[in-house]
Length: 278
Ligand code: ATR
Image (cartoon, rainbow, N blue to C red; front, side):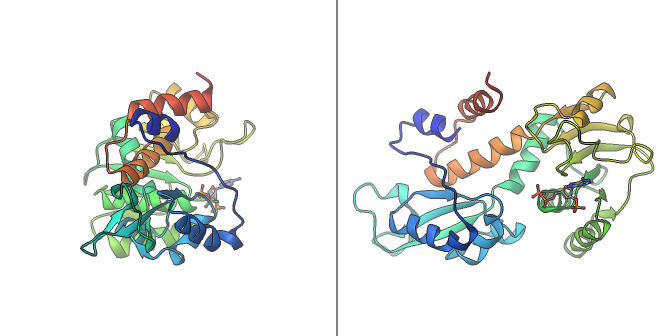
């Protein structure tokens, strides 16, 4: 998707994947800085480690406690830090790494744009999973003003910790660590159940039923339709997979690096072709 976006904007850039051992992450970031890279994306397990390794944390990375995007910046003649794209000729040698998080915004953008979900005090959401992705989804939904959140996780203690964090930060949200007794507007699968074709559904069927939800979102995008999404569609829910999250976090990173609007349709087509082959 980044190659397609780079081509669409006529930039002479390349987006490359590097397999970096966590012990070498600091060296890799400093190496990219020394080579005057435009930026980096980081994935698991580097997102947390990088918090300590960038020179400055954007509010987004601070708020969500993870860095998935780095932008390298240099100082202009007036001493202001600028993204490296703004230096056409001489890129200064003194460069800093600024850490961002574009994952959290991507979750709500996908829920809004791909599922048409609105967030407000009357909105009720069940989040399945309280790992890295589930925690950020629940916190972000609370930040967006969702009135009632239900959190369920195999390890209940982790859901309790996320609930406590939300109660501390967002007084407006009612958080329950349990399945809802009645309907919800949205159920989000943030567990890894569904990645394998023989996985069970990510919730206990005796305790929750998809016909009690209006919309269902699965953060998994491969396979394109998990058993959870299939069951949700059969139950009459609007349903979408996690491709939008991947797309929107990438588009936001692209905008941070280029300072220009991301060609989102071009990126979506490239992503779908790459992942689903059509
Ligand atoms: P991610 O960054 O994708 O969120 P993670 O932090 O490892 O990855 O979280 C994985 C999530 O899937 C967790 O909610 C995990 O539950 P636990 O916290 O109890 O580990 C959930 N998960 C993974 N395998 C599961 C399984 N077999 N049954 C139920 N939940 C499972």
